[in-house]
Image (cartoon, each protein chain N blue to C red):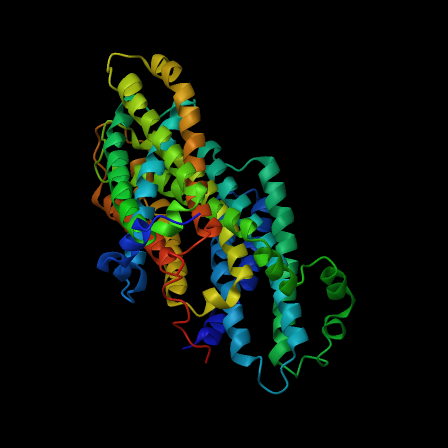
Length: 168
Length: 324
């Protein structure tokens, strides 16, 4: 099957070429670094909330943890942006790898769960901790599982690709 | 200074440090002195951390001398295998010591099982570390060595231990044989990163004044969770190093990363061993941490993000150092 040629045109753009071929530490590696920072903010904070909802660290009051949603959304914003930049750098590599679609699906569901946690568990300030935990436990379980899956699928992208760039 | 200097600079600490730690620990058991016991545990934890750069610098030292006349590859390999085995026990001793220190904080003394386990593992570590020292000395000290046959040099006891130790080149091959094993290790390294930064980041941010509704005391309960992440990353990091020793050894970003991790150890010492922790420990909602605690929290955040940054740039800065 012939690969769609738009992959080739994206790769041929000056930004994509610069990202791949520049010797500057501020090209590809810099974007990748911020993708990792975003991961740390988003998954780091989300996993704490998940674990707390599942009954770990019970001495931490639950409601104030809603302050961490802002950090998680900043992390997600960084990763959506850097993710697009990384995709522009290696469009063929990503889009010809089934693992890439698995990763995006997992992240989509994990972010959907994040919004549910925010709306259904943390928005109503009159809820007791027991109510919050009862409502959030299932979401939290899935959230933890999906984030481990997202990191794993992301790591696997480096080891499962078929093409690095558009085959000539 | 080159990497061989670094190895010579560091390599006595784990051996002598373990002996000093064990000495204090034994005296504390005989004299029933909890402060001394705590000191012993702290020394074990510090040695476990210092053993990492000591181990890593060995490859650079090997690179610097292996082509010199009279240097035996067999002796180097024996020393490396001995170091791997000793490092394993050293890291377990360090991890057990941290558990003991946590128990000391909570119950004013470590649990009985912990004392027994630390005692057992530190004794084994000391024996194995001594062997790392003698096998290392054999490489470049003809005045104490009988030749280039490792087993003759070591005598019966060392050769007996040798039967249980890994062959360095085989462990290296094992790490890189299957790319999915490597991918799995890197995956764990990233999950460990998220655990570590998530937990310590929350504590650090609170000390800096973010989300003041949270009591610092309860956020501090996250530290063991962070340490589990750290332990995962030490394990996967050391295995990755063993898998591609030359890749990491001649990389400036790698060494600065390790240095930053040592600085984080110093930062933790500044937190726990000064009065700072006692002041912060019982702080409830709304209370403001003192300036020194804020400086320590900020250093921790900056250093952890520096560690991530340097780790990310290892590939970029490969082959930036020369062997000589």
